[in-house]
Image (tube, rainbow, N blue to C red; front, side, top):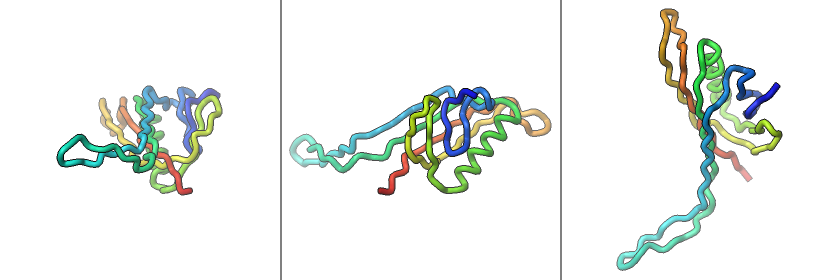
Length: 127
């Protein structure tokens, strides 16, 4: 079974009907500015910030709603999760900061035909 990424035991991929279409990987070098009254600010190194990943995609029907509920259950566990990509690279531990869901084309029983979603992860480092 092909997969894009695995977060804990949650699989992202077409085979589960829940693939991501976008991935934003943000890292910051830890630079800050020290304001100086009569000149330009001075650059100071304050330590590297945690990396962030933001996944985005579109899910369909009740399967998509179920997958988003699974992500929220992982979020509610409040524990860091290992992240491994489809080629086997271990990205380390990550925490779930946010799960955002936008439902559209909702039918009379409350099932959304289309859901756009995003998932924000932040690197977990306690060493």
